[in-house]
Amino acid sequence: MALDAVIAPVLPATAATPATGLQPEVVFADYSPLSSSTELVRRLLSPLAAAQVQGMLARSSERLIEQSIDLATERFVLYVPPVAPPAGYALLVFVPPWQDARLPAGWEPVLERDGVIYVSAARSGNAENVMGRREPLALLAAHNVMQRYPVDRERVYVGGFSGGSRIALRIALGFPDLFRGVLLNAGSDPLGNGVPPLPPAEQFQRFQESTRLVYVTGQQDSERLTMDAQSLQSMRHWCVFDVDSESTPGAGHEVATPAALSEALHALRTHTRPDPGRLAKCQDDIARELTAQLDKAQSLIAAGKRSDAEKLLIEIDRRFGGLAAPRSTELQSALK
Image 1 (cartoon, rainbow, N blue to C red):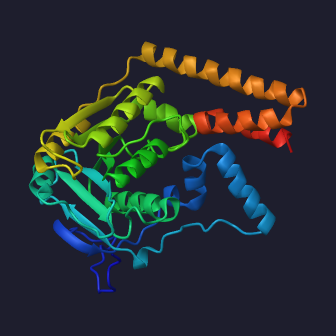
Image 2: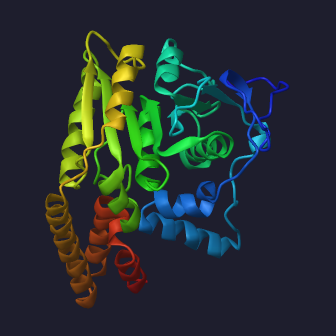
Image 3: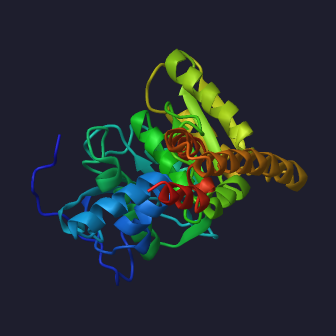
């Protein structure tokens, strides 16, 4: 349910002593280049989908809205532990499936003990537009908190519950230069099926090398445990090895308990850097598979088999996403 219009406390960018504790109805003011529509399209859409958007805009003589969020109208819940750790706070940006901005029950003592700032946006639930609201709201939340509080850049995480967890994975894939870990609480997707699309090669390599994934799902939540198993299997195929999976005894499809959150935060801190040789071999295997598919598409075009080439390019785009660019978009252009 959307929040009523209220007078909300604003966190000024120049505040000498930023507030701590639980702060509801927070208003932020600073924008980030990462949350621009251009950057969202580049990082979070597949190359052919992004090209389609650009083509539609060109034909209509319209432009992307630079920032889809009007921060003056948005509200966030913010929790800041009273004492910052020596290296700075950790930060958890939480994408909810619900509409209100809330801190899950029992999380506050865990966040305080671990020195973790929590921030979550209102009107960012499953009913909201993914690219128009949910993703930029998370990026803007991270940016504004990091502008105001001392945050350890190596402990910046994005997470979510259920449908919000699946959005958190999309954001982590597209922005590994911002988020070093992702908390997947009872919601995940496999890679290589188009949703989420693989990001540009530079982002995906960084994701493979430096992002920590932690899955937390209730032991009785069989549907999401199956999703987790499929997601974990796909991560191994796509050379993502720094992963951890936890099941909460007795829990169903519910937000992580305080004890489960504590274990997850510990797991997020425990990075396991991939073996360079194993990672390189895995990446080479994917590169060979991708090159073979692109070569086949090029041969189909040269043979005049345009329909077959187009079908194959769509499949390449779905499976490999940004890894196939720019060659996939160049071949698509050659069909026109």
